[in-house]
Each structure stands twice: as C-alpha cells, then as structure tokens.
Length: 434
Image (cartoon, rainbow, N blue to C red; front, side, top):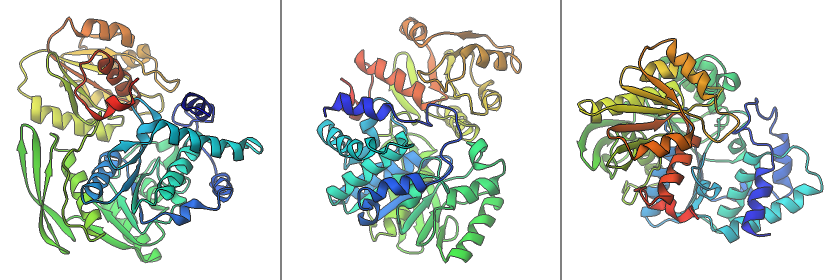
C-alpha cells in the first residue's frame, strides 16, 4: 500500500472531527481493536497524557521538545493537523515518514477489513501512533487527548504522568454544561500517578481534589507546588522564571512571542521535572497556528483559537502586542457549527475595523452567511462574506493587520496557500507540503 492509498483508506473512516455528531458511546470497540494487536498500549515506555480545554497542543509540543532537547527520542501524538495528517505523529522533530505511515495503515486495515465494525479515524490514528512509538522503543511518548474524558481513546493508555491545562467551556454537547461536569469528564481517564495542573476555577479545583482523594492521585498544582514568579517579554521571545518545590528556581526561554505560552511552558517544564529533567530547553520550538506571525507586509497573524476561552486569550494577546497598531485591523473568521458562535464574535467585535466571514473546507464549518447574520445582530461594523479564494486574491492588494482565526481547519487552508506561494515563514510545515 502506498501513502496516497493509505491516506484515502484512513479518510474513509468515520471522522467525528468533520461531522458534528456526539461520537462513540463506548471504548469497547477501541479496546477490541487494541486486542487485535496484542495491546501495544501496555508496552509503551513512560507515556504522558495532556488533557484540558485550552493549551493542550502547545503544552504537548513544548513537553516533547524539552524531552527531545535533553537527548530522549520522544513520540508526540497531537491534533488537529494543518496540512498533512502526518503532522499528528512525530518522533523528535520529524513527522512520521510516508512509507512508515503507509505500512502501519496497511497492517491495521488488514485486521479491520474482515470485521470492520465501527472503527473511527481517531481510533486508528491513536493505534497507529501507539504502534509507531512502541516499534521505535521511544523512551517517552506524549499524547494530546482528543476531547479528553471517559470516552477518549487515550484513556486506555496507562500513563503515570498526566497534565491538565486550563478547563473551560467547549464541546458542551458532549462534555456537559457545567465546569464541574466538564472537569469530571476531562479527568476521568486519570486513574493513578501524578496530575500536574495550573491554578483552576474553584469549581474545577473542587472536582480535582475530590477525585485525587478517591483515586490516590498525586496533585501538583500551580501556586502550591510551583509558581511563575517573573516573565520578561521581548520582540522575538519570552523568558519565564518559576519557583519549584522540587528543584528550586528554574528559567525557561520561549523562542516565540505570546503571553499565552507562559502557562503551557510552565506545565511542560513541571512535567519534565517529574521525570527528573531540570533543563527546560525549548530551542527550535515551532507552534504553527498558535498566534503565529506568518507574513510581515501585510501583517498576517494565524491562530487556531476556536472557543470563547481561547478567543478571549487571543484578544488579550492582540491588545498587548498590537493595541497601538495604526493601520486597518481585519478579522478573517470561520468557525464550526457546534461552537458558541455569537459569544465568540462578541469577544472580537470591538478590536477590529473590518470583518470577513468565510468557511473552512469541512462539512462542520458554519455557513459564512449565518456567521455574518449573527455578527450583524451584535455590531454595526462593516462585514463581508467571501470564499477563501476571494479573500486570498485581495490579500496582497490591501495593507494593514489581518488576523485569521476561529478554526484550525481554516488556519491549515490558509497556511497551505501561503506556503505554496512561498510567503509562509514557518519551516517545519514545509516538509509536508507537496
């Protein structure tokens, strides 16, 4: 099986990322799938799982980078991808190669085709990552949970270290409408070991403390076991100083801008500290579509924020770095149907001068006319609806600041276009663009 055929087979499976359904009702199907391969999840070396609402991806990537920079071959499983599905599965700084991806898909599909049942896209990708990391005997592997919770595929991985980013409202149709319900779902997979987390909302903290007592989980919590004491912001990066009970004072240099990265870096550093690693080295870090400046003239920022919590953080970053920007500020926005769209628009409506509503290339994307109608009910500012092609065609003809956000699907579409034009500044993603 070649790569193109393997990719087609994978994309033929049920994909809850692209269809707005509730998802699987049980992990039994995935458990049966793992049993066909003699439970490779039980043979992983030191897996670490990152859960939460906001910052899972950046925390996972930072932790994997720290481990790799300390000389450990480290697996990273993350989602979603921007250009190629291979981005989701990495060893060190390299995406899985096409031949290895195709070989593993062929092996998995052979077992499934005879009794296909309901096997999902995410289940197969999780299995593929597990097998890949096991086959290469990676000393560590970092798994970013999907939605996280009782029915997430990563729950069946027996990790001793768990990381929990900030909890907020997202996927409420699946996880629940209250912070306590969402927290319970997110940490249901934490059955033992250590849980490293940030300072949380009191309702979230209550659930964490109660579950830790019941399950004998060791909690490592911001402002109790570690504290961010000082942050220095520079044009090309950020320096974070933290105090820890385990190792005293530590310093983290983030080679990217963005205040939202501070918490993720602290979590990643504390997670590495639990493994006995004190050098929180983040050199060569790339975080595509996380407040990423991809072009200078016009100034283009691409960000994958897609819920009110992450968009509120994006707005704070924009005010901090571009609050005094003198030119026209344009928002280019697409969002999925199952998101809190009106609330998301309300957060962004005052910062921008001009609004363009478009759609991502996925059935889950809300119609641009519907987004505009919701926006018009809360703002009288000028807005337009455009296809991606129409927006991109006029991009080079206008000056100002363009912020493209609302969906990782949209971010991937735009990055791919810019890369093919040779005007995308990211280096790593070029390796997956044909």
